[in-house]
Amino acid sequence: MKVRWLIADLGMGWAFEVAKKLGIRAACFWVPPAAYLALAFKIPQLIRDGVIDDKGWPKRQETFQLSPKMPPLHTSLIPWNKAGPPEGQPAIFKLTARHNEAKDLVEDLKKPVGQFLPEDTRCLQWLDAQPDGSVVYMAFGSFTVFDPRQFEELALGLELIGQPFLWVVRPDSPPD
Image (cartoon, rainbow, N blue to C red; front, side, top):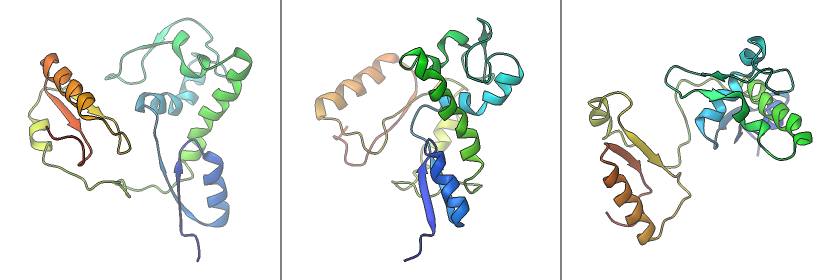
């Protein structure tokens, strides 16, 4: 059987290089927080702007913003410089910087493909009616399983914050 697709985590950039060499179409997914991905994609600009050097180290102590709708980040909190001993941090930065190369090797699709669960759009009209930045979004992915007590505690916590929220849960989660 011929391999037609490669689907891998963006962090496995080498796999996309192999797929390109073999003429295999590729798609990627991303598991860590979206803010980390946004930071990874901004690395070339952060280097050009003199915020970090080409090894990922801050050139000065300052706060910068990746996007107008994201909170500011201080250079002392850049995640690849907070992971393990200092001698290993350049390798972590290099791996993170390779996300830019890997993303350019996957197929450019206009919409996501291959979701684990069917898309449910029933919330979109309600969500569009809420003020910008007012909805708490909570999702733990399709692999997380809560026992009924944990599920109830999360539900009570969401209710107590008094904010509108959108909570994505597995279909087999404990009943509400």
